[in-house]
Amino acid sequence: MKSKWITLVFVVLVFSTLGFSQEERSSTFSYEVNRVYPYLSVTSEELKEATTIVDLDHRYKPSWVKEYISVEVSATCQGQLRKVVGKNDQLTPAQKNILNTADAGTDIFVKVIYLPQNSLAYNEEKEMEIVFTVDPDTEAHYASGQEQLMLYLKENVIDNIPVGSFKGYDLAAIKFTITEEGEITNAHIFESAKDDEIDALLLTAINRMPCWEPAVYADGTKVKQEFAFTVGNMENCMVHLLRIRQEH
Image 1 (cartoon, rainbow, N blue to C red):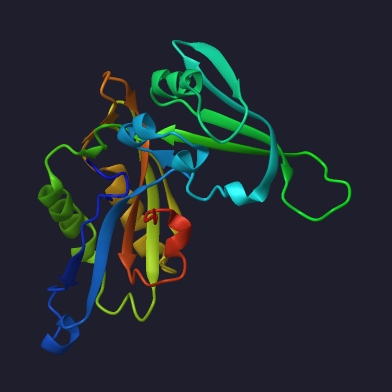
Image 2: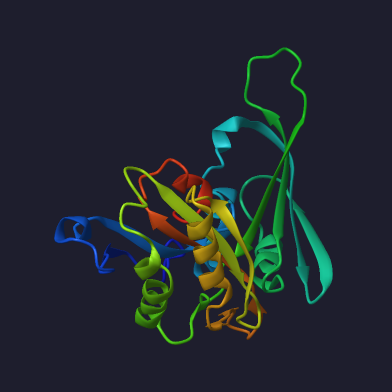
């Protein structure tokens, strides 16, 4: 079963050959293209197998709950909003039906109203909402293939960055979106290279990049996806803010 956590990652150690000395050419840095994940998503396989709220959001802790008041599952199905209320964290057949018939690319909501597990004499009702999406069956990808994507970035970006521009934990990051038509849009600097010319070089290369194949669901629905192009040291503390690598 394909894991939703598999990321479109390409890592290349780049050796500059722009006429510098052999010592200068020994400088290396990496560049990657990664998918930017939603805050919470599941695969279609995981959705079909889900039987509890924990299966939808592994951060959810049943131990937080002393008593359930209601658990509402809602989603848009064939353009119409459907809701089913259950009594606890166990998904009912009707709730599972909503989950598995939700329109592709739309948000699914789980609203839990409960009494929290604590020692207070007066225990007030609390409400928590979980919002998630279902990952497309096929991720967006560069139409000419991974190797050609890396070659394009090397020739149009990496080969034109002066040796020594990235030192230590330096990192530059550009976020961009692949539309339903496979076009590049909303390219913007997420983390600056601290050099206006390099920032411009990165943005120009992304904006002029050839079209991709868009992300698509099994029913043929195409959706936009966000990606990040990073250059430099991936141990930089800003990496986790990109949401490009998630732990299950």
